[in-house]
Length: 335
Image (tube, rainbow, N blue to C red; front, side, top):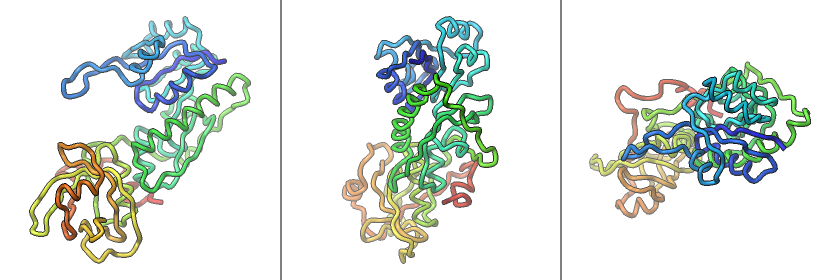
């Protein structure tokens, strides 16, 4: 049995926290970021991890600086065997890691050294990868650069969104973290040093990315829509054959079809309600009209009287767009 301090804030950490609550291992404390303003009312809101810990009756500590000497002493006083940091949002200092004989471990949603950074789930889809996975690593000074203890690969579904993949990787990773805790006390897990020549980056997303270019092959269009779902989404205007803008809609889920040219300009709604791309078509599955709830595309088409020949138009806002990693999104690393 390992005595652990769990450090987490975001949703990705919840599945692991839930598994550890029901495991043989003992959670001495849960550490999370302080409450922050959120929502339209800008109310102070606890992190998802803090909310879970409070509801489960777990010892909960909130701190803006986990490396403050007084806080480090507080952790040291409860004598943890290991620190587990997942989607926490603060870097752990050497002095904090030294409070636990087994140091710290982290769960990262990629097959490291691929996609180090803030948005590995999104970037795996955006770059057209067919597989991704999770890695349990030692916490090291280099971001996401620690020795790999365990990894598990999984295929990315043809219509799977980043949000769906995020949740599925969280569940896969939870079991992997528990497995690591089961085996670390024996000393049998030495860790594999990451190959620095294989490192790729996963910079964070921004609102300027909320567009899609239908003058690309259907597979790339699909990757763009799914990789940016649910946030920031891909914003498109629905245009009638007379050139009138009818409504704006966020494209959230889709599936690519075929490689042959569709015979109509990119962005054109086909007779089967798929969208023409440079090659092939994209079948939209879920959309969200601006100011409305998310709905399946067929319901949207019926409700708005969508007809073949109408156009979906999308473009980056003036002066905005992706500031980093643009080539990987648009095909240089697409595989």
